[in-house]
Image (tube, rainbow, N blue to C red):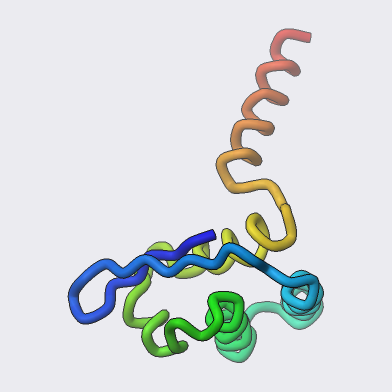
Length: 108
């Protein structure tokens, strides 16, 4: 998996080829915590710290905040935690599925 952050004005790509079972467990715990308590700054920072940890702290929380496009901040966290680690469907896959369902209902 990879993430691209803008650091010192340049795009820098960070990669991680191994994700441990511990990371899966922690992603699931964070996801469950967010569902129970709701989303807030504390949860956001825990999730960003987790993303840093997944990438073996190749970048800091501040570098993540400063290096990710604000319009993609949440989708990047969701992609890494949800899609890459937990194996959940991507936003595009969900949209495609819902579109197909709607088309099937029209044809039925």
